Image 1 (cartoon, one colour):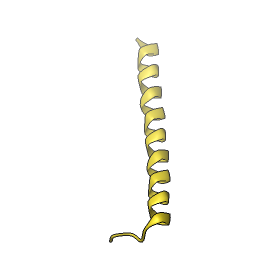
Image 2 (tube, rainbow, N blue to C red):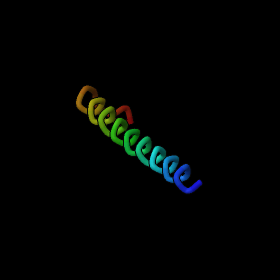
Image 3 (cartoon, one colour):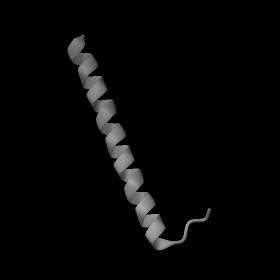
Length: 38
């Protein structure tokens, strides 16, 4: 039970970190390519 919970928490944390990194990369790429629309 506890191991299952740890695996779920770890996977959520890793996916969250990966998502944030991808967002940062794409945001930086968009900013370099074109001026911000707003």
